[in-house]
Amino acid sequence: MNALDFSPALKELLSSNQLVGKSGKSFDNLGSRSTFNNLVVLRNLFLALKPARTLEIGLAFGASSLIFTESHRELNRPPQKQHIAIDPFQSDYWDACGLMVNERAGLGGYLELVERYSCFELPALAQKNLKFGLVYVDGSHQFEDVFVDFYFINRLVEDGGIVAFDDSSDRQVAKVLRFIDANLNSGWERVDLAPFRADGGKSLKWRVGGLLGKQQLVAYKKIGNGLRNADDAFKQF
Image 1 (tube, rainbow, N blue to C red):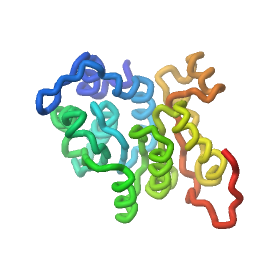
Image 2: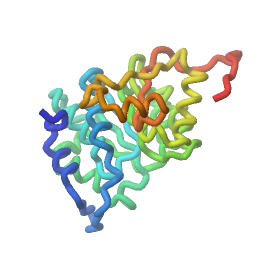
Image 3: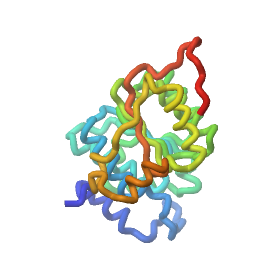
Image 4: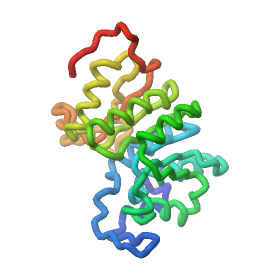
């Protein structure tokens, strides 16, 4: 059985070659959808954690959001905006495609769309003292943006929660991950994603990618407060 069969809306989205937005804008290149393997991993991480709240940066066509919203519904939770998606370009560039796929699936009540930059919204969430059990980072891939995203996510993830970074082999994203590995390893540890993949981590390409630091998705589990003390030595990365 396909690990994503639980969501008819997601299956339809992944099989589509074209999407039409709210104003009629047509998208023939759907490459911005999260990959099948990424989606399977997110689904299995959700099932393992059963987080009360989830968060993602970047909504685009809505594939990853369906993992979260559909999984919240599957646990028989009443719709209370348990999943927050931050995407300043959803209504404009993406023509509300991601929002629409959730609404058509009857999942709109589980999704809170925030259409402003994550560098402004994440500190606002931190000020509200909100906590999330699973976070997916798939927004801007510029170093400074990913770094700022994680700076606040570090404060938003609950103990034992997980943050997953898409396109982790991108050199700018990878540099942020090297900073985490070098300087925050007392609060964060890398998650072995092999058990969460559809192939159980048996893919030779995936295993070689791990050895070369070229895997597309990397995740960390929060094992401490994740904050550096003022007298902590700074390690080059």
